[in-house]
Image (cartoon, rainbow, N blue to C red; front, side, top):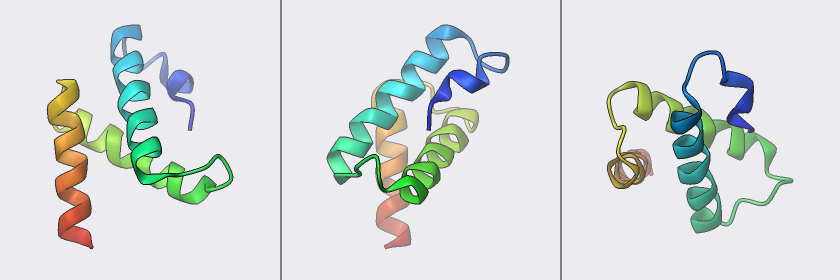
Length: 72
């Protein structure tokens, strides 16, 4: 999910961070472009965590990883 469509809601710095973390997590989870639903869900998770105050790259990644472990 390209985060650029949220350019009116977030700064370019924020969008770069969201995209970077999303890309790292997609690679880590081996989500291919064809895994659209899973990628959309992950993008939402990243945005929710960011809006909850996880604005540092490493904390944002950890927050998503913790959610995955508690939901697994």
